[in-house]
Amino acid sequence: MAEAWETSVVKSVNAIYLLFSAYLVFVMQLGFAMLCAGSVRAKNAMNIMLTNVVDAVVGTVSYYLFGFAFAFGSGSNPFIGTSLFALKGVPNETYDYSYFLYQWAFAIAVAGITSGSIAKRTQFGAYLVFSFLLTGFVYPVVAHWVWSPAGWLSPSYSGTGGLLFGAGAIDFAGSGVVHMVGGVAGLWGAVMEGPRVGRFDAFGKPVAMRGHNATLVVLGTFLLWFGWFGFNPGSFNKILVPYPDAPHQGNWTGVGRTAVTTALAGSTAGLVTLFGRRLLVGHWDALDVCNGLLGGFVAITSGCSVVEPWAALVCGFVSAWVLIGLNTVALKLRFDDPLEAAQLHGGCGAWGLLFTGLFAKEELVIQAYDSGEVGVRRPFGLLMGGGWGLLGAQVVEVLAILGWVSLTMASLFVVLNKLRLLRISVDEELTGLDISSHGGYAYVDDSQPRFYGDFLRMQDGARS
Image 1 (cartoon, one colour):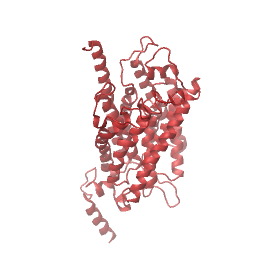
Image 2: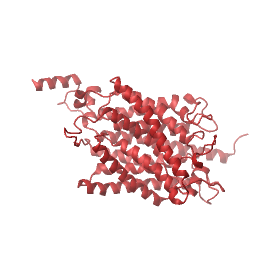
Image 3: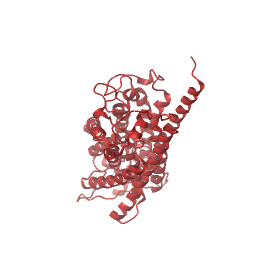
Image 4: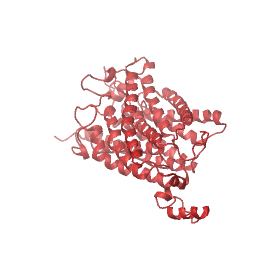
């Protein structure tokens, strides 16, 4: 029997909303590209732009073939999905093409996070390998744990044993699933490759190696901010869902509130970073503010739909100091991450998960995960009177992601390093990847050599 026209309109509006959110999230790829390009030296701009394109094209194929199936394939396996490979069986009563596209936009963002940690010194072949594995296997497994109804960490899990600690882990838009996965992967890549040439002097003191274009960094930051309004509010998946427990409210209310909490957390983190770095280094630093802003966005992504706007201010305030503190520790340990991706996405992502376990409001949790059904009770934030259950599940998610990504990605980077397929040579690094690997500089300058061989002959001539 044909659907009522009202039902068809509701489904159409929800599909359009999800597709529009997917387009916004995809714009974040452009933001990553601009941010990364501005944060590296001009001699590596072509390389970092190409890696961002590779994230999209490689991630699209790998997520289509394997990733979506591992993340959302039907079945009762709490660890990994086992069907829907190459979208066989899609659309169905649970998933359609718009849902795939939205999740695909998330998947390709993960590899973009990791690329920042290993910028300027990675062989291009190694980048292709890790990008395919990360988007096609490592990330989808974590997505299955938290976002699939069959996942063992999911707040919608209905398998043996019930919800973890009676709560399940709340990671609404992916502080852990997306950002912490990308950050931990980048951590291991940077550890295995070691610091850039010249990043630390003979006494182990850090040497500033600032990017070549602050304009691109700021542009990239604003593009990411714009895309985050698809990343977080879009994770409701549907907008036309009324709440029985709140007259005149529905997912459209949650979508608006989620956009507000996202903006507040990022802005607070940016302000705190502005004044915090002013006290520490003695000047106003635009680039630090951009990273602080992004750290606030990363942290609020987990609890954006289940906390009140005032709590978002707390989230942003703490995330700024988490990032500042981790950057200080990184320098003392001689850890080199050109874009601070491991600290920003890994550290602030972990804080975001814990923040949700502290400040989630019960009414908002029920609205986000049970569509406001009357009579439902769920564990909520510890500091909101909800007990330890939700916070315990959040801690387990942090540890599970840290263990899984370390096991898989550290092993991959070790193998690539042993095979001498990971890091470029010192000469290539000093020359720049643009001319040594990509046929010329990103910025045309007739006074500069166009090919690596020409550059080497110039160097030989200078020495003689």
